[in-house]
Length: 341
Ligand SMILES: [Zn+2]
Ligand SMILES: [Zn+2]
Image (cartoon, rainbow, N blue to C red; front, side):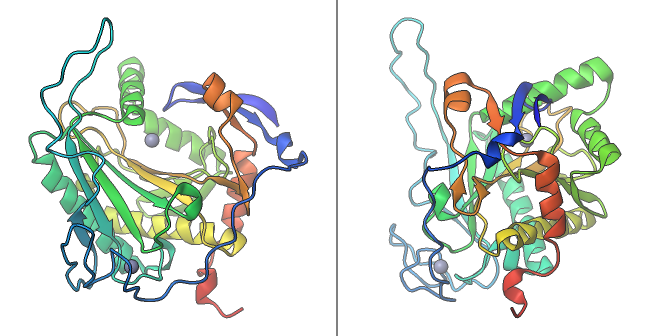
């Protein structure tokens, strides 16, 4: 396979050169996974009852637990008065609220090993966070994400995600918002709904369809095993899902992360991001979805961003989205650690 595919949400071409996968590789390999963690780690800043670097003690929580990040990348006390830079350069205040969401009091599980009730409870917690943060006067956009695995820089295995509620809109959200708005103006239709219709018409990249939620490897996937999980109904943020839709989304989400782990029978690293419309202003044409960007192409083989991506600005995919989707379809069933081997 050697072609370009149009990425309608990012409005850019993705170069697909899937024959490259077989070329000899002498590059870096990632370290083998660490030994299985313990159920409780007295040195973990996320485990119940432990004291964090700020001096605050975690409560002995039983479900999800949310706290303000002790090392925030964005904060409400960021400077509001900035000295203007030289000439054409521009700056503006970067303020926000950064929080951490623990999925479970258990140190030794991942999202893939929570049961559906727990994943649903996590999504309900995120809905509550959205309601709280949307009401804050200085918040324009809420980015919720999980970095999982040492290859994406996470050394603490305790299952958690992060929330950045910012006074600015993240670039990918802005790009998708503008693309969706333009498509709506030109066709009267929701862009993501058109993507969903085409995926269902083709069918080869659908991973699971559960009630009102769907998961698929998009036609225009940039990363190997890149997967979208979305409600079928167009909503701006996760807060707008009703209880049934949230439960269906939790089921589809859990199904996908189990397949990831089952693929190579190892904890599968990823960056997961909830793409939500900005919480202030017009969000017409947007469709809330969850994107998974896995950094590995094969076990111990990282996808490097290099000349085409960093130098040229176009993503070069080394893998066929259809093949990767077929591998994920075949990796269903219970989580590999839950069954005797
Ligand atoms: Zn822990
Ligand atoms: Zn997106």
